[in-house]
Amino acid sequence: MGPLVLQAPLAGVTDRTFRRLVRRWAGDTLLFTDMVAASRLEDDRSHRKLAGLGDDGGPVGVQLFDHRPSAMAEAARRAEDLGAAAIDINMGCPVPKVARRGGGSALLRDPELAARIVAAVAAAVTVPVSVKARLGWCEGSADPVRLALLLQNAGARRLTFHGRTRRQGYGGQADWAAIGAVKRAVTIPLIANGDIGTAADARRCLALSGADGVMVGRATLGAPWTVGRLQAQLDGHPDPGDPSPRTRLLLAREHLELLLQEHGAHGLLIARRHLGWALAGLPGTAALRATLLQTPEAATALDLLARAAADAEDGPQGSTAGQP
Image 1 (spheres, one colour):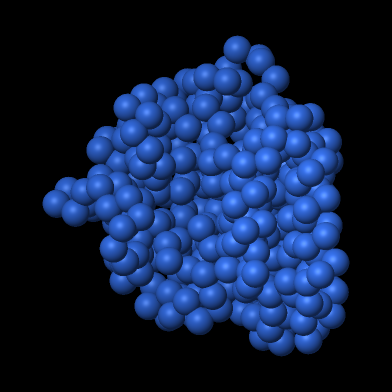
Image 2 (image 1 turned 180 degrees about the horizontal axis):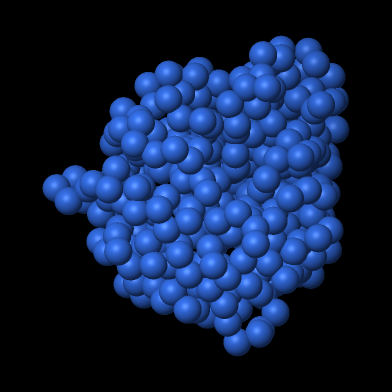
């Protein structure tokens, strides 16, 4: 088997419905919830993001964020009780509203606190604890090797590093060589993240960083087959290709149906961003995409997608293109 390919936890994206679709191409892969604030779990409130973890169809890790070691430890215990197969600590989210609360990338400015959080969480649970981080807060202060060693010594079982600082956001290019310096310093598995969307990207990243695997994020938006496709390629199997236009439209329609079942009428609002991503780049769907982003009726959206799929081409691989 080749290097590991993981789906990145993405806020507002990697919910149970999206994970259900990803599993069609990556059935046994460890997937993650999107970020969950520790405060949502520490007072015993049931959080919708963690509902039915045991019924997810495969292992699911819960990604938590906060700046308080005790709150993170308690939230991790509750997540494990709800069926989490792993706990991932977010130390990379650059969103200001998260960083202002001391969580996410704010922890990059206080490596000692970051290590205390890992130690508290690792002591609280029996499942593996991992961390997803960035190279640093900004280029001038970044010391990813020191951070990684502190996290490893505190009990992290795996690290994922995005090859940018918090100040960079998603601009510029990910520094895979800097991830390589971290890999050479640690003894636990290291996953590289940032600017990976194709098998060629993954191979270049792995060659430059020496990482044990890659994590794919933005390239999976509207494309839940990406992780499974890249894993097949890195395992040395023939490239299964992307699904045909017809299959992609049917998949988008099914995604909408699942969200409606999960959330009722509100599912249409949740689905809009997914539908926009799913149709981006599909020939002849610009008008359909614009309409779907505005229609207030779920039934209309479902009908439009069904008709578009009926008119679309299957492509050379047929209606099951891209599926295992």
